[in-house]
Image (tube, rainbow, N blue to C red; front, side, top):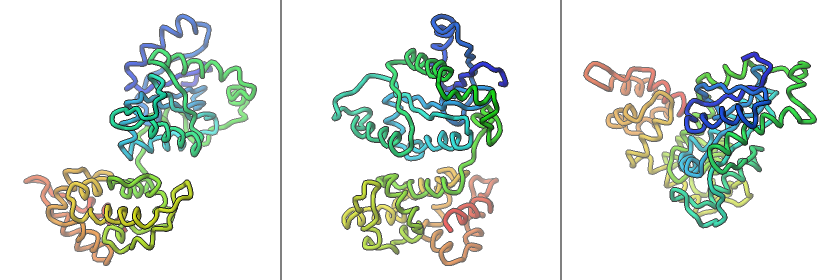
Length: 331
């Protein structure tokens, strides 16, 4: 990975696009010093690297992929991993999405039941709020073309990052690109907290961000200890307040965790290493309300004892590690 040539690092799950690169590099781009490497990436689908330094990170989405991501709150914030890498690697000059497929003009069109206008809004927010470039491609071959073109055009930039790397004007702040992009990353506590808040269906990312910003206690909202009066003046990024009716609906959605089994399972399983199966086993013996009240009333030792003895199978109990994790992230 220390060659002077540009490396296009591709996630091995991009199986349908990978075959499109070699014919292009052997034909119209044969004079470029670019090499393709395939690996299992944990951040981005593509990375353009030089001397094991990240230059560009790219995520490819078809409209169908984007629609699926839009429905899944955890996947919807995957872009943050690319931004984290950009912040760590000072050589990274661009984070981009390539949207592959037909060009929609009818804003009322639906893609997998999601309005095109909603998907376009999501892309606009990525661009306007986070500085993520939105690129377009017609098909898989065009995607490969576009990525190779980006690699080619880096070399002709006026402020050429390759020259700066060669002159050691830019130094990496952490490890190599390959290691950083392929290693498994454990979610940090902030991400887990975000996942807990956003596990509730019908609660938008904007609402969650406002709650976290105002340091709300997730235990209290689930137990119904916040009134709509306390949150009705919270604001969306646009400046519009939640308002009375919306605030009432938000509070109801969180308090329903105490009576909706499936929602409670999804909530607990937002904590790493706690599967939906384990969550279900726990909630059969210890209701969510009891879990939260024990943590709130500082009677955690009883909770640890009650959960740790629950049988997962005839020969296996849950043990203490799981309740300790629950207490950590709900405290």
